[in-house]
Length: 158
Image (cartoon, rainbow, N blue to C red):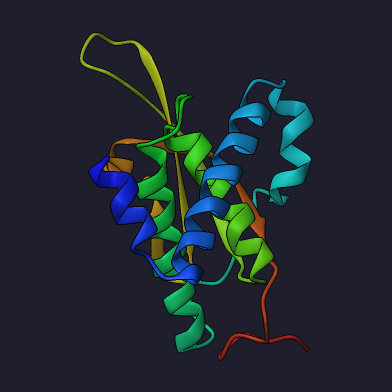
């Protein structure tokens, strides 16, 4: 009940952002159940990265808002919303805002020698989700979603 009251006390923009995050987390969970080969083309350009420079301060604010909304709402989904689901949802939310991002997929071995996987999302120099423990993983693929609002300073388009 306390959390419902907290949600209702948010301003309209924040409520809409939380609802958007919840819906994209659900959509990403559905995508996770499909064969990855069918989902991969919708994630961006395979084995490419977006620049690590950020366009403007407004984009930086959007990155923080999207990151916070994904982390917050992933705790309240009725389905599992772990790293891959969060990365896909955040990528699609950034795409709607015309902000480029790169999703990384990595593998490693756990303490018992079993293969484990992890996903994380970066936009500009910022990690939006999944940065915890990413250093332990070897990147096996990446997907660049290059939906930028305007040219990024320092990038050559000629």
